[in-house]
Amino acid sequence: MIKFYQSTSEDKRMYYASKCLEKYGLERVKSPIRADFVFCPINAKDISDYYPLPVLAGNIDEKENVFDYVKDECFALENAFFTAQGAIAEATAASEKSLVSSAILLLGFGRISRALLSFLLPVTRDITVCARNDLQRKNASLLGAETLDFSKLDDLKHYDFIFNTVPHPILCRNELKSLKDDCTVIDLASFPGGVDNHFASLLGVNLVIARGLPGKYFPKSSGELTAKTVIKILKREEII
Image (cartoon, rainbow, N blue to C red; front, side):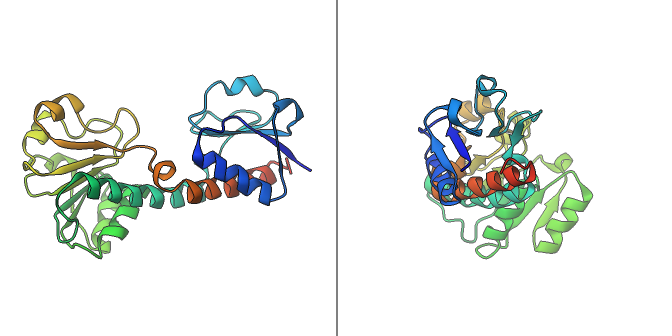
């Protein structure tokens, strides 16, 4: 029987992932000395402690015997939908407005924004996607959204909600000054994000920095997805 060591028990998503791995027939052990591989959370630290055992973790630099399950395309796609659903929950909690019939701006059009668009189109047709790539704008347009280029991102007073997925400065002083008073901004981008937090605070912008949403809102679903991806990698690398 293949044995694994789980590096942390504090992450609820890891708890469910480990339970799922056990259902696949793997055995969890209490010491890495007895393990065939080590299972770590997203953004794990000090994974070098476990070499030369195979290590599976998220958002890490892959090298020999170190595998990043977040880079799996199927994982990334499904996880984007978890993130999008969590983002809608964050927006709903942060605003006194409904998303229904609201004017919404999506900054960037990667996996998360595409998932957001699919969730939001049934409740409002006033959705604009801002993307640099012509093909992304064309795809968004064909799906039913208005589109614009980042060079035209100067007057934002039309929007009730803005979801940012771009991990570099997009909403800076001038853009933030153009927001309507009751606009809610949800920054989903990885650090440092796409919003100037200093000016957002000075201007009283209703800003929510929302990261790690799958683990926060859907630890069971997210954990099971992680376990399935881990099994996939273990089979690919002939560890099991």
